[in-house]
Length: 123
Image (tube, rainbow, N blue to C red; front, side, top):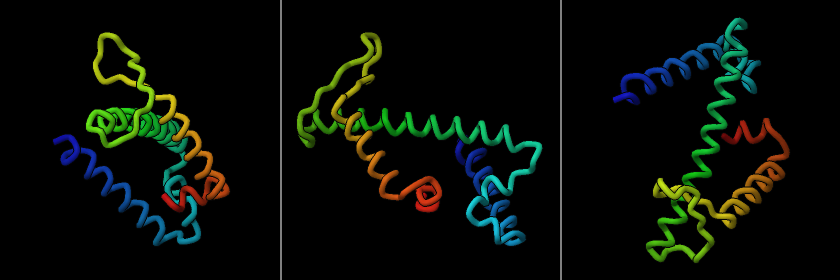
């Protein structure tokens, strides 16, 4: 309900606003998100976007650990070290091998794209 009532309309408005901005200012294609934000709300939006990126990266890491654990339980993944980080909450796990794989993948992606703008364009 929250997605349909709040998030989806907000995304449509955001993308529609960026499209309208790009129609009027096609030279701002490389930085259309931040260029289309009015000056008074630039820094609050920048902080919110940065915090959203942090939350998304933590979600990816947690999901990687959880999916690896579930795949191991089903016999679909080779055995790796799984450390339970909480005695009171089931499912909070950490895997050093998966963590190192994510680190190496991140370094290879950044090196392969040779910087931030190329990664942003690929996204």
